[in-house]
Amino acid sequence: MNNVPSLASKSDVQTLSELRSRLAGPVFVPGDPGYDEERATFNLNTPLTPAVVVGAATAADVQHAVRFAAGNGLAVATRGGGHLQPRTGEGQLLLTLDRMTSVTVDPRASSVRITGSPRWGDITAAAGVHGLAAAHGSSPTVGAVGYLLGGGMSPVLGRPFGYASDHITSIDVVTADGHLRTVTATDDSDLFVALRGSRGNLGVVTGMEFGVFPVATVYGGGLWFAGERLAEVLPAWRDFAATLPDAATTSISVLRLPPLPEIPEPLRGSFTVHVRFTYVGPAADGERLLTPMRALGATVLDTIAEIPYAESGTVHNDPAFPLPYYDRSLGLRELSDATLAALLDLAGPDSGCPLVAVEIRPLGGALDRTPEVPDAVPSRGLPFQFFALGIGGPDTAPLLHSYLATCVDRLTPWADPRSMVNFVSPEEGRTPAELRAVYGADLYDRVVAVKEKYDPDNMFRINHNIVRV
Ligand SMILES: Cc1cc2nc3c(=O)[nH]c(=O)nc-3n(C[C@H](O)[C@H](O)[C@H](O)COP(=O)(O)OP(=O)(O)OC[C@H]3O[C@@H](n4cnc5c(N)ncnc54)[C@H](O)[C@@H]3O)c2cc1C
Image 1: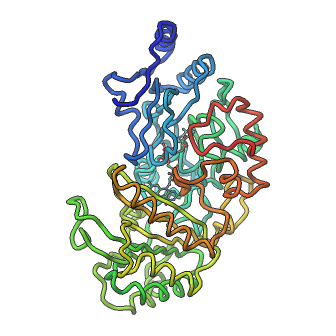
Image 2 (image 1 turned 90 degrees about the vertical axis):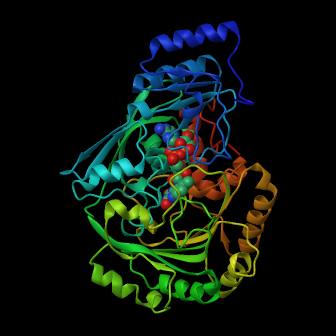
Image 3 (image 1 turned 135 degrees about the vertical axis):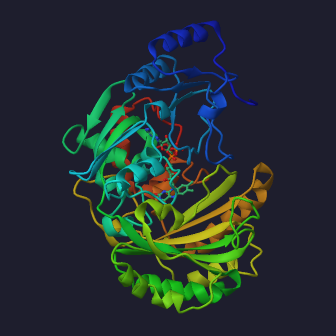
């Protein structure tokens, strides 16, 4: 409970009791049982420290909370799956939407309607019953709304079908004036365009509808090579990735896994090169495409096989439990021999790298296509995304921050200013100018114009905040 401010004055308490009387869901202040569960984040190094938390049970609760915040001069944070909270929201109001979560699949329309705060695992299971697949990210524990509002790059369905945001058809959002709006390509279309890519900057999303795809199985999994073989695997993988059709996706991560009991043998405590691969199509075709990588010979582990789409979270095997970590990201315009040499220096066997994961994701395919209804996803056309992560609490921050910064500096000669919004770390996008570089000036300024129309007082600022430079 350290460093958590409270709304302690008499008038605040009265206002809070008035708020409580209007809500179907609970209100928590520091010290209340349940406060810590409500503000919990996936990254233990990015705690939320609000003065008040509203556990909304209905969209009307969200409206009351937003009006309460406006009346008390509070900023509003929203916690979905809790995977990316770059600011603490200290002394402000936090909304959680878990109590209003629902997932409804319309198999005839190939669409899903969600309310509240489902995690991708919930949606994948519900859609899978109908042989349908949602374009979720690498981890089933990520919140669907936070992911969809940040572009949403699926490592299985992204290259075949584009950014998940491109497939949103309708958004229910409570804006700073407390109004609940259903925005679409034709209703409040400026907000519809800007929301899909700008995350929590424009309001609190209470519900959404988006398209899903008739994909029941995929050919996919991982090849883990001994880390000592990085110099051999890296160029072979780069050349292999360049040959793949849009239906196939690969990425590579140099892993130094901790000896945690949650990590199965033979990976626990190992230094490996993890090549991920998925193919949406007949398994035999996927197997043929994979031939150059399998030709590299001995692996520590090979899990690539035909799997139900519902198990596609096993391709990356991201941790499902909260951890303390620091991360950095960078868009890359090329993977030249010189880029690979830098990666080898940074993450290879002789590097002394203290990071758990150093990853490259090639994008491309349908991720480069312009969607039917424009959105605010800035990374369209970006060829590669770099991401690195080190696990450790604040005592490790000097070492990990410094190494992560070294990685970014070393790769800067090949950097593209664009980056995947969902990968922009708490250390990045700290100023409007930095964020503007990520979005590109034109797109950023268009989102700013929408922000100034719907949130003129910047109530939704507990995030990578999009404001005029
Ligand atoms: C292990 C891991 C794997 C990942 N893999 C991928 C991947 O493959 N592809 C990819 O694109 N991204 C990936 N991400 C990034 C992830 O998509 C983003 O961090 C996403 O924003 C997390 O959403 P959340 O709801 O879980 O997080 P939260 O921290 O709850 O929310 C993140 C942001 O979204 C906003 N938000 C959440 N819910 C709402 C709402 N209802 N209304 C308004 N704003 C809201 C919040 O205000 C906040 O700004 C990954 C992240 C992790 C930690």
